[in-house]
Length: 297
Length: 197
Image 1: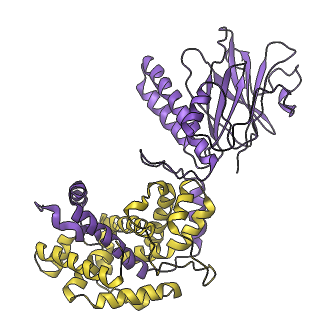
Image 2: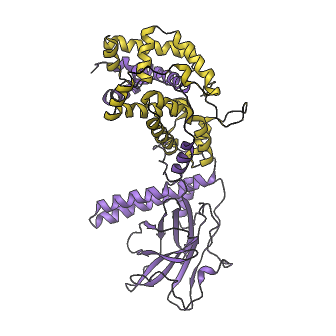
Image 3: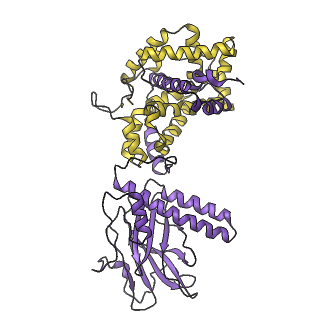
């Protein structure tokens, strides 16, 4: 092992160091402006060596790569960096993600109280995967006056993260049930907002176009339209005039500000034409908040 | 930070069209823009595949590496820091490291030992793309300007994937001499190619 890594800029730029030597040199770099300057210039130089070796790849490679990226999650930027905010949608997604992270932290704490840090970590991973999926879309609606239901969905992962705030506690004989609404109606699982709300990851997005939340008997109802005796509320595409959903400002909203507003229950809506309501049906037992979302294929 | 003047060209792109800026494209890719990634592919697949082929010398493995690298560029587009160098340099550093990792893994290394018995492809054989030719000619001219020992050290390390210790053994010279040759050779190449650090 070389005692002084100072003279390794050349081998480093050529990838001619072992992993150990490379890590050592990279630790040395911040304290050596001369080395850092050389490394930058050398990296531009070796890039030219690479360009000179260019060779047309087999034609089939393009299709394989393009297919693979559609099912490959992108990693978020390293901490402390922000993506350029050319598009409001990206910014808003980050804002929504930040809000969900806040919710997640408390959710993780709640889980640990119940003795399973491992579950918390697993949930954390799943939530992060959905929120950072390249095709993640966020919709939020207000329900029950001040409650909010936020859905972050990813068609490519076939999953969604659902968070709620201020949903009314239910008697033990009742539970909230989530539904995928599309050509068919499918249960997306149940939700118990007691205690600190935490995000729920639900799968089976499939070809659903809307997401619904109803109050059902404890344990949930089977996969059928909830309360068949009631008019099918999800077929009613007309939001009532007193629709609780408002469009979020389309631009110019600081991410942090939007997050705070969302947390106050003022709703953030991104990338879709969200409309929704919480409607007591005539049957009296069920209420549904509809969260339509637009999800590109 | 400027991209290299003689950057790669799209094999299918219109001749003479203003080449898209890779850094700007990567910014769009970081926000999930698949069309932008298609353009990144057109710009970089040739250098990435060609470099992998040069290092591992096996078309099937080179194709695997190229696929891995290009998908990694999609995954990590947000990790690119414009302040640390050009986008081309960043992407090709990722590609080279991946190819070198592969060639140093056991089986690939053994296969390489067999193939290195055959002569390395001449520059003319690898430069078949019209857009690559100018770059290739310039690099070849500048490589000729190095001393033989500098050229050998750089070629074995960069195109061969050898560590500087292996280069030292292969050439039968001391470690310090190899490090110096690599550094001095790169300085001379950098200046000859007009690289703006």
